[in-house]
Image (cartoon, rainbow, N blue to C red; front, side):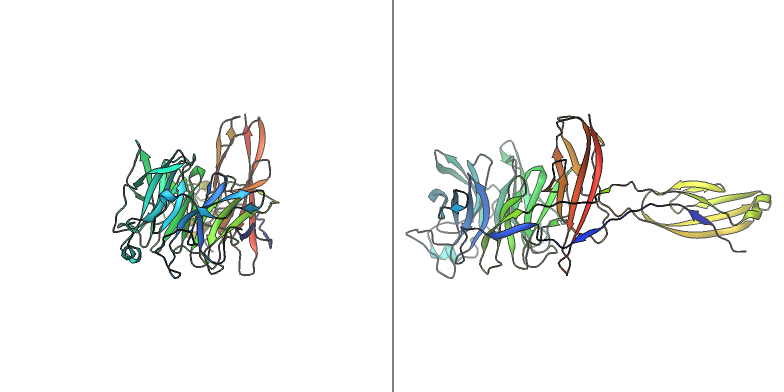
Length: 471
């Protein structure tokens, strides 16, 4: 007689994978103030306009550059009406040197600037062509319309480069890129936190972000979200744009931006508004560095799946050995996770997904001999194919509540875009958002996800929802 047992359980799994070929999520086009002759890159918002770097002619009376090696300066443009822009002009002569200047970052008030430039700015042709004249970070204050109190960053070192600074929205953290010793290779991303009006020691952002190649051009948004460029992380080629986000002190795996923004060329130096719907970035897809604008197109998700709880609890029993009913016997179950249970019919909950070698031994109580010796069954358990919305189930009116969508068990689905619907339609965001509800009631929170486009140009699309109560 064969020795076996039956594992009886029921798993209900509904997977609704909606795949569609849609237009690009972002509309991308060259900015009107970006030329086809010169290089323009690293745009930032400033007082209703844009500040950027360019090697175009700055109309200076003295210039040590030549046509094959133009120096970069800090330019600004302002909006004129709905679509027109002013001609580019030098941002400020007092922070302009005869060497390379920029990129820049401003505090929220616009009266403090941090910017890259060559550390040695003596008017010498030798210094311009000297590769040992590294880039450093400098700051200045705007007082009575003049940039004054120009100071070097405390950690500048003439032997290494410190470039592409970016202030956090509250001004208490500065991100930058450097090839200082102790990194992962190439240019690494670092940050310093401010304490008592001084910058703390540089912190390397770690191997999840930094690679043996180059990471640079950070741009910090609220809620700990950081955009940056990398030519070491997996992308389309050259420099690609990614973002990460600090959640409970940990950085999430970098998310590769939409394929409308990233290309096989170099894409870097992104800035976006507070809604994450409009912004600018740099690219050399036209063979020179140019600034492009992007704006999101409306998007909707249908057939959203309700998030389900993983159920790893099952009932085990053996129904083949009916004759054993006349014999006093012990049923011994070993579930392969360190738990053993005695009983003809038992219930057991596995600790999580994995492979478990479940064994059943049936022992004659009179003789101590095995009637069915160590029958083995391999139990394979997986998480439900879904993303998760982690949040409290109950919230309070006018009190901030967080929704986090970092955790995902989507198989073969590489997330490129997050969209949240809190009752007013889907809007772009990141894996973590915070909001407040103004009225009591029951709300359905939806998380829409776009995946990376496949070889046929098809973009996978998934949507999940969760009910919460606001009291």
